[in-house]
Length: 456
Ligand SMILES: [Zn+2]
Image 1 (cartoon, rainbow, N blue to C red):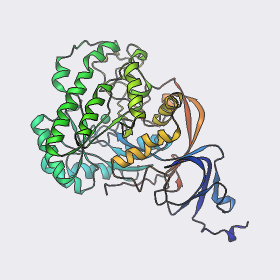
Image 2: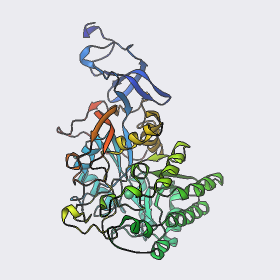
Image 3: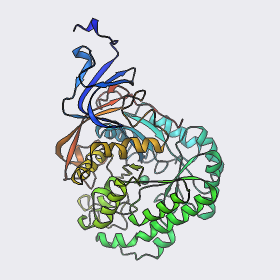
Image 4: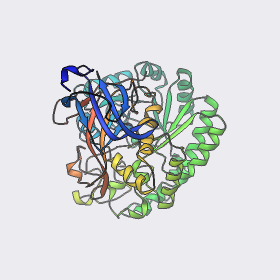
């Protein structure tokens, strides 16, 4: 049929896939996109447009763009660790179309409106995907929370144990009470790094290249003690809390009990806790160091069981790179000392294939992965209705994903600024072929058109 006879304007495009992952499951579909939004979802092959406006993916799956609510971009201030341009190119290449940046490791941190403005200004013209910001709640900044909330941050991160950077101190119990009371009042979401400093201080500290020594220095108890104290504080203040990067499955019964008691609590875990295990970490390979740590295989199985049971609202990267020298990697002349190395894992571009590789092996579907990595995190930050699902009215943030495409991870070939990732050398299944942001194909070699987004 000639283009002039098509029922849609030239601005409309149809993306056709025999494996479209929709909110009610996976099926063949045509997705009509106009003006950056999803206008219609129809039966496969039913929408008539000219060839130039049709992208037929065949058997390649069509997913909603992923929403990664846990990314440390580190710019301004520590741009040599990562940066808006490199992080968002990596995100786009990895099928992530929305990134929410963490408030620390940048200088200044996002603990004041001025700090937020500095980030927004720096990020301008550097975002290949849509980009939002978390604020930070630290000792002494309770008065800054409401102005930051009004300025559109998605919530406030606090650490219960030292964060690793001096300009973002952790909260003692009195600070936590103050922050959660204020966040309950203004209706903000508190997101918490839950490890207990007293338990960490009492744990055996044995520096060196042996991963088991590092693991012993950050025991399960550090997480359960911190989570118990947090849940108690949430119960008393009425604040809505979210536990970041749950590593220990021992916290799950605490979360179940708190939910049963009416505490508003959600939790996330991360690709590395689901796909890597302590038994496999080579001595001295500090690319695997993160806090809380990657634990053993039986713990990993328990995390998968909880994920399958719907106990985690999100699987997000906690992408937190540094320069190779701070990782003390042996191949860069470092000591490989787990105690002294920077604790953070780089995986923004690899989260989807890493999780899919393991999810498929365990019998999960693409719909499950989309729930954990797109619609779940979107709902956490109030973006349901805009992001995280192939649904009419949502932004046309889409990913063409080959679920059978295998590739070997080459750290230097990733868009991350630094070529360090624990996935280096692994073969992963699942390849991102194309990423669309609000209906336009993202080309990381061309100009960016990501937007800055705010809590609505
Ligand atoms: Zn983090």
